[in-house]
Length: 269
Image 1 (spheres, rainbow, N blue to C red):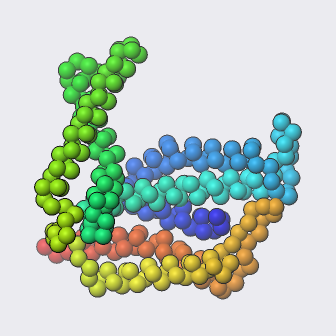
Image 2 (cartoon, rainbow, N blue to C red; image 1 turned 180 degrees about the horizontal axis):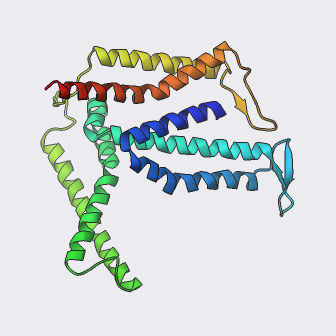
Image 3 (cartoon, rainbow, N blue to C red; image 1 turned 90 degrees about the horizontal axis):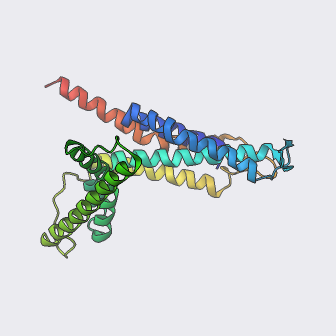
């Protein structure tokens, strides 16, 4: 909850999301996340009246403090950063990657999680396909009275539920017939652990250890109540901040480097 760390996380995740998804990330932030952030910023000062710096009194008679406003902004930034990081995760982590990482350790759980992660985009695509099919048959969900559109919507939902259940059963039967999860079963994968991955893993471990060291030693502390106060600025606190920034920027830098390398290889063909 340190303001500087929240700002670093939010800026890095937003930049990475824009790099991965382009204008879709900006539209998502403006349409969904910005109203949620504004709501979090407004709700906390209304219901939380802690803090020593009194600004004014609300119409209800409760005090409005500077600390409650700052805490609301910090909580909103944290919420926005977490959602943005997870949106980047869903863009990067496909089901085959997830199964490669955890398939041998927890085969059943990894299969269920990979199916769950891919459920939402598949459900949206199938919903659009079902709606288009119904529209071609003369049942347009965007036209007609409320009850007519509700009836068409229920029909589309029924199609989606049936389709999803059948697909889940077929997937389970297919994986079972292939011996998924049995001892000694091998699995094909295009991924392999090389020297580049070892270097990246060592770098991530270093950053994580440094950040946890800063947290344990109290160099990343920040309090909002009763007054705003954080750890004193020193070379060590700046070092921890740079390590956290490097950790957040690592996927962004790796993506840029690999994309440039790919474009260079394509130009040489």
